[in-house]
Image (cartoon, rainbow, N blue to C red; front, side, top):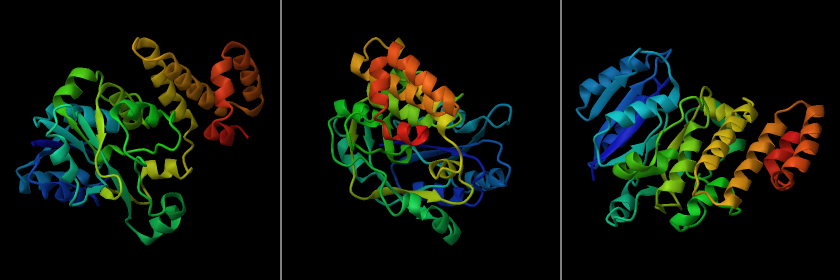
Length: 313
């Protein structure tokens, strides 16, 4: 295996060395591609030192040296990648020693186009743990049991009950089918949830198999300045970004002829649910009345969606 590890770097001066060195422990890691995204801290200086110290570390910036977000940074890294396999690693996370144990066996089967696993949690400070432990605990982020590849897409959309989720840090993909079947890669206009949207489409087009699900193969770093941590904890209101996410999925499903009708209905329901949830209180009820008439299937099921009810009431 020749694995290219994709790492966007923004405001990660304190964490990027640990991330890089956690990937360098594996002989299968052919290269680590860092894309520094105009960080306000000294992350660029740290990345330069890492690239000088380790031959397998390659450092890039956007052509204009500007800030373009994690999606655009991952896309640039994917363009530069020369390995046969792609793995992802956020700059404040790190791999564990068992990261590619399952992958080395599973990818012997040519039908396996991708493998996902479980990630754990690491609190970088007592303050971070005090703030976010009630949100994340010590739980694994994982799919709860092994599923056939044909069920992964529906499970990620929330159509199979308590399916669970996998993180992009726990995903390894064959590069060839990724290049052939996914275009565009990450949607750069989504400043949040671009990785979720990518994983949704990926699981539709590629055969993804479960790897290690009962213990972590990587750790998510939780700290006070992590933007996604603040979103997950409710400090940043996610409703508008969720509307954008599900609108992207709705537009994709409407333009993809092979998507079954029940999936299109479910995706539209999720979009309508978040669209209504972000509206002012009185407008919500007008929108519900309108969609109960014009889009009854979507809104009827949407009323039973727990995230929708929480935001609405």
